[in-house]
Length: 135
Figure 1: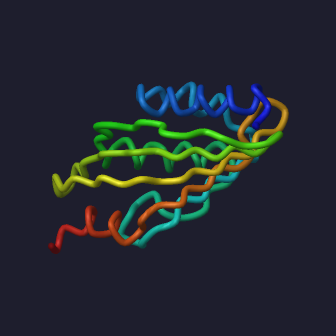
Figure 2: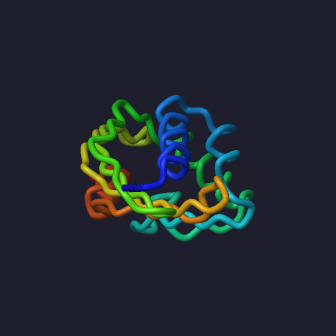
């Protein structure tokens, strides 16, 4: 099982996401943290982001374009500095109004009480469809 410290950091981060608390989210990231959010070029936040300022821009794009309606953690497990989370999420794309319901897995690596790596494993095809305003 993951160290309570690592799981605690991830839990704080997830609570901040659910509450739209960007300041807390940013405070939990290491200065040189890496965030990997795979997806189509159609999705403004898809890609690899490193460092607080680029990650802040990524989070701003998500907030501007995504209405998170439900973000329920169904399972959290790990060992040491590694934490894996399974999430049941429902969101709406602000540009198309389409709903996205997906089960995702997120991997976190926590070092020194801060997130140094966060990677999402999601249905990138479904995400691209939600954001594609061509239909």
